[in-house]
Image (cartoon, rainbow, N blue to C red; front, side):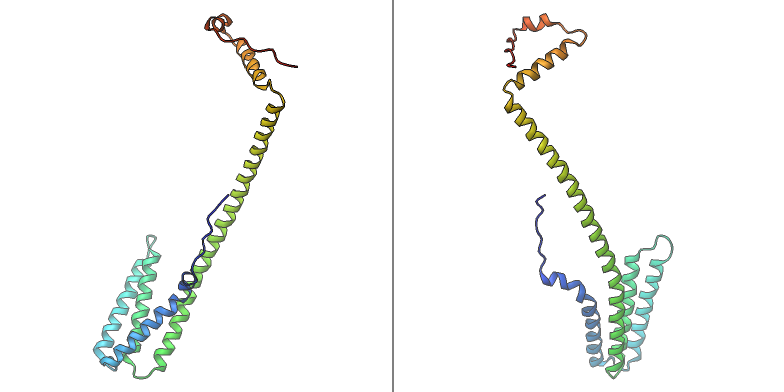
Length: 199
């Protein structure tokens, strides 16, 4: 019934929403720094990025192939391939419009992929909260019924002072009806005699 209230910090709530933009922006910035340090129109650097991006894409294809494919590894490999391709274009080209265009496309694709996972996560969270609410209401109803029943029994026991004696007498009568019961054994044991119930 008493669940702790968890208030998450606004930065923790905003971090997943800005992560795709931060990731693609970081790759663009690193590509432009690499461009300023001699990668502009460098065929060797461009070939290196093509080989790395193709290798990452191939790893993603192998990771997603077959029934035993792992979607997390495949997604990571494809994201790495796209990041390497963006960094290669940002480092090789001399102007800024083409890297910015690719950055916008990469950011839009990252948000499109992330939005699918956010919807799935939100759907699972809402379903869990609904199940928890239903379960909490069911348990609360059972607890309230048991509380009312126990209070009623207490009140009945208070109203009849001989309630305990009556219950004990009924138990002894029921025991006497069972086969093999020896009332003389109880008398020999020295049990006190029950007081007469006030009617």
